Image (spheres, rainbow, N blue to C red):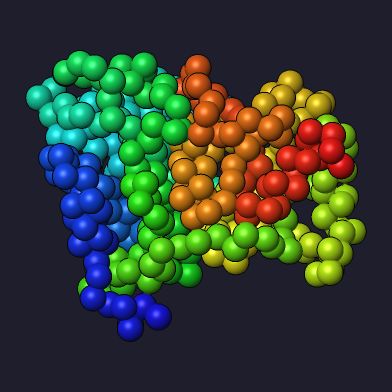
Length: 338
Ligand code: FDP
């Protein structure tokens, strides 16, 4: 597949997307191209991680109280450095930083970026796929450095979103609101080539992804939904469980093969009363991708992820995301219709 379609590079596709927007200045194109470069640098480092002795933990904890892995740090620094001087961003937020991240004076642009530099990082040491997730908004009014307010915009206002997954190969999936495209990095030439044109998620699936160890703490509607998936036949037989524990990997598999991913609220733990995943740089960008691919993303109390008004940079949100009919079914359980 990759070889046959080797003509179209990610930069070329990003340019083509720009042409769909007659008033475009090229700024978003420039930003995405810089992100592509960051992805290539991180990909090279992930592949070399064992040899370069950057596996394991750095000894620092992040704002979420988690151990920061060395590759997390590397990915975070790489993206920050590229973005702070690309001239297209006015402010950033990252999973790894408590506060907003300014850009270099004189390099302020018209966009904001929120990112999780290395999602699924607890899997780094064991060669499970990890990834970078990103969300881009146009800044609100103003010039110069951006503020938290510029970052706290609804997912429906995103101008671009996507992820780069570092797996058996490195794949970048993104949308600017005109469909979803996937590109595979050919390491021999250092270029991403179109490998997944116009991605659409299967409407219905037979896979669910959830950490079932927490089932005792779920709300009733979630428990009944998952029980139903395990028993339902609907002419197709019961669903199978696929849970990697790396959101970007679980999401990517479901996007291509069909499936529904859940990280619901937790009745027991105050900390997970809103689930675990972060709105700005996990749920919202993946929600934009999935909706562009024909799927859905809602909370486990029925709100559309893209409609949620963020109130803080590291806000958590319960997430049900994936194939449309599977999410529709979840919604029926949430509404008490089933
Ligand atoms: P990680 O802690 O390894 O970074 O958001 C973080 C995340 O991974 C997701 O990638 C993953 O889906 C989830 O946490 C796994 O959490 P559980 O271990 O609670 O299932």
